[in-house]
Length: 127
Image (cartoon, rainbow, N blue to C red; front, side, top):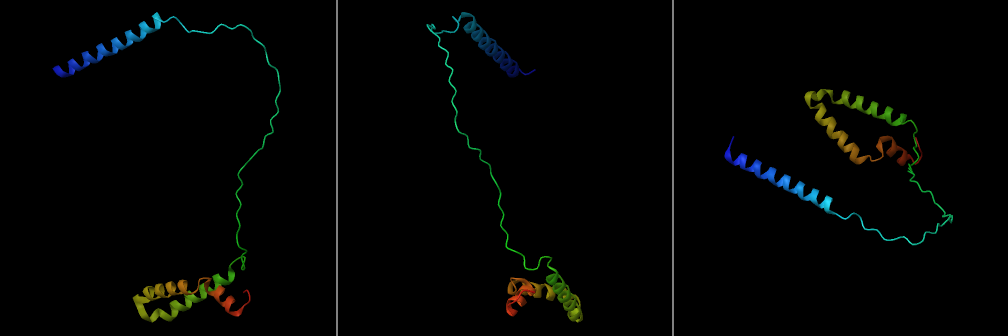
């Protein structure tokens, strides 16, 4: 073994034994706990009623009422538009996806309520 490793181990062992011996001597030489002298004990029996309030967290969610409960009109209109658009743009070949993507982005930006929602707004009655 290395000389410096042995020196470190011996010094560490001496420090550990010294600390243990010092702690042991303090326990043996202590006089024990110091207590005050109790002169008189009077038991107290009094019932105190404090009102309690029980609190709990409750999650409340408010949603706007849906005009088309099952969203059938929007689904049907979207399917018709997509199929019609694919058929119409089929002559472009590989560019169909790019042109269709650009048209979808423009539709999303222009029709915030969706195509059916915008039609309902223009006609001023729910579809």
